[in-house]
Structure formats: structure tokens, C-alpha cells
Amino acid sequence: MAGNMQSIRKKLIQAFSESNGEFLSGQALAEIAGCSRTAIWKHIEELRKEGFKLEAVRKKGYRIIDTPDSVTENKIRLGLNTKTLGQVIHYEESVPSTQKIAHDLAGSGAVEGTLVIADEQTAGRGRLMREWHSSSGNGIWMSLIMKPHLPPQKAPQFTLITAVAVVQAIEDVTGLQPQIKWPNDILIDGKKVTGILTELQAESDKINSIIIGIGMNVNHSIDHFPDEIRQIATSLSIEKGTRISRSKLVQTVLEKMESLYSLYMKEGFIPIKLLWESYAVSIGKRIRARTINGTIEGTALGITEEGVLKIEDGEGTIHRIYSADIEV
Ligand code: BTN
Image (cartoon, rainbow, N blue to C red; front, side, top):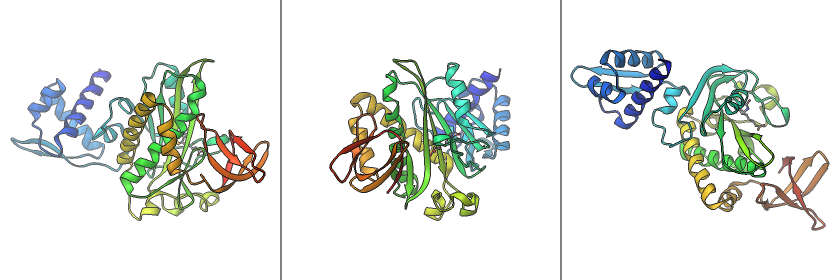
């Protein structure tokens, strides 16, 4: 029953997506969803409770005239233009970490493209075991499950694919021009708007799942951030000066990611590398990389096939950096 309810809801949202604000009659909706008109009415009421404004006019039917500012399953599905990414969505209002849920789902047969998204995280995780501030109502906290048939060494490339997808989505939706700081920070004017955390479930020779965690500061004002990150963090709305639709951004990230992923599977890493380098803040600049083995200063040359950063120091020695904090 729950599965059936789910699939009716999916079909309804799909029909409204395609109707572009035109009326759809109760009869047409019942036929599309394969259920009674009474069942349709119940689903419409559920959508209203979720904050969708549906106009109902006799002899014409229903149309959506406004949608809530949310990242619920229905809101993301309405207007989503992908084949696989985000076709299965697990939305929760508040969770410790979407990354943890995605790991569990990935280990128990979740399909490629499954998205876990929450309005709030109470124990969001960043790279290097850091905390990730994830307050309710203003950010995008999501984890995407990918299942490429590739060896585990290729996994870091997915961080770079994701960074390019996020930059392109921010550009499309807001007109802002973010930059990438190796390996996975997205910055605007030197301050962080998005972090990416790529984790792996793999055997020695093959990837089972890649769990890509994306945290985006969207509608935060500066007071939403804890004191200790106010100097280094920003949000899209602070930079743009207007509120931004979180669901539109999620949809655009998924769409960009889907097309970059298919480009990558067809043509390999080179086109992704070129895109990534075109958005990178550090390439050609002098940077300082703090690694666990010490600090290296020099000119950032670019990234390798494996997503490794190359830095040339004053003596002309080229260092390959696998993991570090970068200062530009
Ligand atoms: C970083 O820059 O350190 C990476 C931050 C990644 C945060 C995201 S938010 C969604 C997902 N769930 C988590 O707990 N972390 C990632």
C-alpha cells in the first residue's frame, strides 16, 4: 500500500511537472495515476498540508499556483529533469547526518542516483572529522549514492566531477561565479559556500558505492553561522542579496551531475579535468599546502588524472599532494 501511495504521488507530481501550470482535470489525473478521483483528492489534500498551493476550479481541475520553500521529496521531484539521479529520494526533516543514512542504504541495495536529503542535520560531518554546521531551513544537506563500475582508485575523480556540477549549478541558478579550492571547497570571494565529502564502499578491485555528501549554505544570513566560521563562510543569499530556491538548486546540481557523469563515462576524465581547472582558484598561483608531512609552498600547476594536486616549489621540484589544507 505504502509503495502504491508512493507511486501515485510520483505520477501526480510528474503530471504537474509536465503541465507547466495548466489545469489538469481530476479525471485526467485519475487516469494518469491509475486510481480513483477520490484518491486523487486525498493526495491533493496531502500536498496542501505540505505547503503546495493548489487551485481547484470546477470543470477545469487542479493546478499548482505556488510551492513551499522546502526540499521535500515532492518539491524536488516537481520539475526535476533527470533520468536516474534523484529518481529515488529519501527526505527527512531532521537527521544526525544524511551521509550515515546514505551509507546504510547503499549497503542494502539502494539504486544508483538515490538521494538522501534533510532540512536539518544535528551531527553533520565535514572532511577530516570536522563538524559541518547544518541548521534547519536555510541549507542543502544531501548525500547522493553513485554506483559506477570502476576500480576504487577512480573515486577521487567523483569529488572533482561534483565540484564542477555544483559550480555550474550555482552559476545557472544565481548568476554568481564560484571558484573551486582543491580538492573540494566551493568559494565565493574567498569564502566557503559549499563543501563536498566523498566516501567509498569498495572491494579491492571495484567500487560498490560512492557516497557523495554535499553541504551548501544557501539562505543563511551571517548570524546563522556560529562565531568561529563567520570569517570563512558565506551563503549564496549573502552574496546575491536575495533568497534562492533550495529545491531549484538541488535539481540543477542533479541535472549537471548527471550530464557530467555521462560525459565522464563516455570520454574519461580529461574533459572534467579541463572544466575543473577552468574554475579552480589556485591554478597558476602561489599557494601553501599544509599536509600531515609538513608544509609545501609553491605554484599550483594543476591536477593529475587521479585528482592529485601538483605544486612546483622554488627549486623546481614538483610535489604531488594527496591531502592537505590549502592557503591561497
Ligand atoms: C567539507 O567541506 O568538509 C565537507 C562537508 C560536507 C557536508 C555534507 S552535508 C550533507 C552530508 N552529510 C554530512 O554529514 N556531511 C555531508
